[in-house]
Image (cartoon, rainbow, N blue to C red; front, side):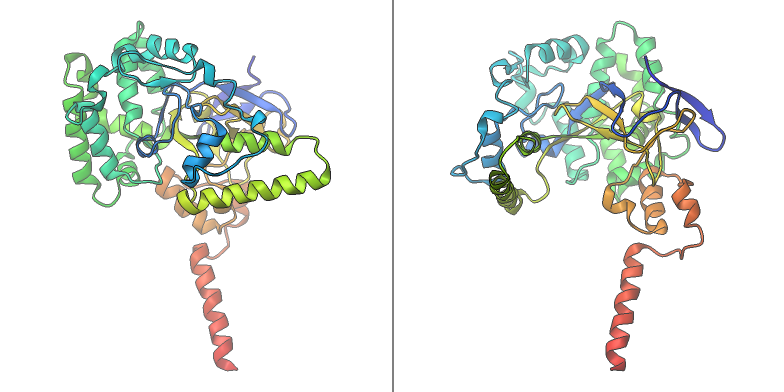
Length: 392
């Protein structure tokens, strides 16, 4: 039973309202995605993830050595490798060789979309319309990625394979409430400065990939805009990492203090070696559409947080502050660094990426602050220091 409800709130639209009190760290809900998919470039660079749930398909040692580009790296405490128990269950589609973490994921995928999505021997054919569409997207949307056209490709497969198409369309349309008259700005966010020409190329590639009569309702210009709008405003980033999961497990071990310090040094060293080669791109990354999670509004002082503790695409919403019955449950659409920036900086990011103006308690309290970004504030401070130096 869920202890919240979705209501229409004047001036905000849909909102998630708590129907009981939640303590800090209490789980509010867990949710599987309506659809999810690994990012296109993430997959192209060899980040191995289950094609259904994005669980890592590398052992800890394989992962660290690939990320650091060093096959001589030794990792301690490998008995706590979170992937080890899954390795015997790894499997793949016999036709297209797409990999899964378990037979359960393979069966789930076949029942939901993969009977249609399976490309067989054409998976490696660069001229196949799906591969052309994906490459068209990749040339427009370089890392760091915020979405993938393959999410829409999977939606099309789900639609064709669905036994209850009206229900599928109703669920898909539930993501649509916030995108009316916002398509052009969303395109700009997804595709950059040359979005008009790029959108035309992407739309053409999409129509070539889905030219069956069954997809006709999706291949009109307006329908494609709606799909891109859903992708732009509702997709939730997903990151899974065998390394991060191992670090969490071993740092919780009841070790002597000296051993803990030594382990911390080893972990820091591993991250340094990995960072020298791949920088910040440590994780399997993708995005998904979540029916419940998409109904949660933003706040710069969030009382909840979306997490992925199982190293797959199952999102867990937990309270990060006490929530009282009747309170709106809010998450942050910004990362921790962005939340610390000025009100004007936060509003700029939210307008550009989510196309709304935040009116949370923090933003209202800072309403009289100067309308300058944090970068501009830092530049002003630097100029003041320069002036002081000149006066000396």
